[in-house]
Length: 189
Image (cartoon, rainbow, N blue to C red; front, side, top):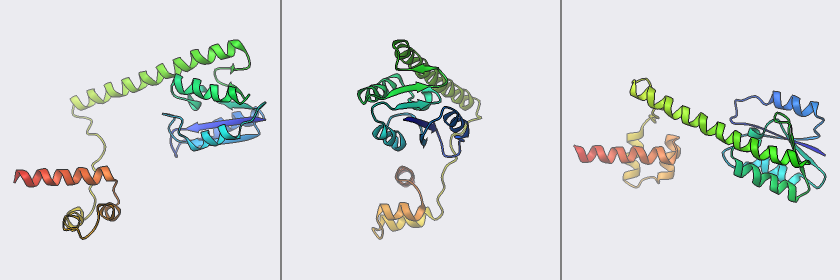
C-alpha cells in the first residue's frame, strides 16, 4: 500500500499542493499534519508509523515535510526499515529500496538540516538588526482586561492561580510574568 504523509507548519497553511502530488502518485492512505516538524512527537506521524506494514511504501513530497534534522530523519527511516516499509521522497527523487537512495537520503537530510539552520540564523540576524534600528519591538504585549482585580483576588487567596489564568484567558507563563512585574513594581515604590 502507498501511504502518504503531508505536513505543513501551521493551521493556516495549505496542503492542496502536497495532496495533488499524492493523488498523482496513486497514494491510498494519507496522513495530514498541521504542526511544526521540530521533532517527531506529531500525532499524525505516529499514527502513520503505527499503520505502516511490511511491503508498504511511505511517500512524502519532500524530506523537509517528514523531518527537520538528520538524526530524526534517519531514526524514522530506521523505524520504517525495521517494519519492512520503503520510503520515497518525490522532490529529492529518493527511494530507499536502493543503496544509492539510502545514501542520497542521508545527504539530502543533512542539507535540509543545514538549510533550516541557515534560515534560523538569518532570522536572528535580521531581528538583531531591526532591534538595533528600533524597528523591532517583539510580539505585542498581552494586556488582559481586569488583571489588577483578578491579581488582587489571587493574592487574597480568593481564587487559585489556575482560576485567575482561566478568567484572564492567559497562559501560565504570561500570568507569572505579570505577577513578577507587579512584585517588582511594588518593591520599587
